[in-house]
Length: 159
Ligand code: MG
Picture 1 (cartoon, rainbow, N blue to C red):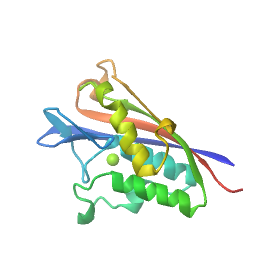
Picture 2 (picture 1 turned 90 degrees about the horizontal axis):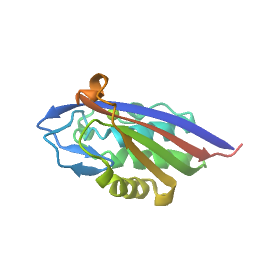
Picture 3 (picture 1 turned 90 degrees about the vertical axis):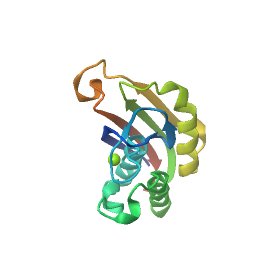
Picture 4 (picture 1 turned 135 degrees about the horizontal axis):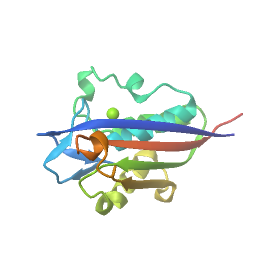
């Protein structure tokens, strides 16, 4: 039986932080703020996978008050999401995600992001979709105050 899940995440852009998206460190004057490495793309994908399983969101598995996850690479969270798929005797079919960022340009980094995510999930890279769009200068994302990501995942689960 095919299950789908949806995920969304947003983090503020601040000075003095690295900008990490899809496990790629992108040169930029600001980075995303958060307890972990604040990789909004990986977080949205985690929640999409967990949603397909009927599990709670990633914050349930990795408390943002736990010092173990301070500045943690979000690959760890993706690996846990993949472990949950196995625990449910499921098989991840594909994920698809969209980044919402006014700047910097994301396109040059998309392929590396896909490879990082595919590796963390033990999934063929052809099953990982990532797109990026600006917010057409509208709202907080349009003012470069933050970067958001949305994702869907499909998982084949036993009936
Ligand atoms: Mg997050």
